[in-house]
Figure 1 (cartoon, rainbow, N blue to C red):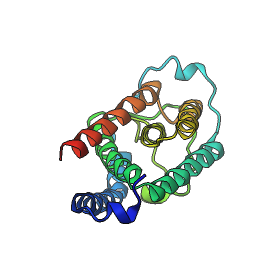
Figure 2: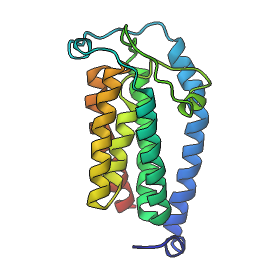
Figure 3: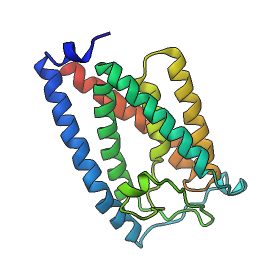
Length: 204
């Protein structure tokens, strides 16, 4: 496994790291403005979702929060240990965020009528200090979990992230913060972001 000191010797790695961090900071700064506009949008539609409305609405905010941030901290630790994991995850997340901005903009949806707000004190800050309910297609929580699964290397670690992806998908559905299609599309789009990143890094 290549260490950070060894990876930093290569100009291409330094360039991709610095450019990626600049892009990530720009996206994080843009997020509050974007989600504020999305939440104020009036022209959304509420989907007919027989699967979603056949299950009871239950508040899973605490277990969702615990799973997401424990797996995120673990993935950050693996990024710190292995720069190859870091650079793939960094650019995959950037592309995933851009795809989500595009998809939410192009597909204006109203939240399910019996939605229970997902109380997440950390994401709350990036959403402009308000709870956003119209960031629907696709599920960012599910997609990010699956992206971490794709980026990690060891079989045990990947299995843990695969299980956590499934749990998050089920819980956001039960909390009715997403439609079924939002959750089903999330791993597919996460894989697209991962594939684009791998293709870009290999051929440049």
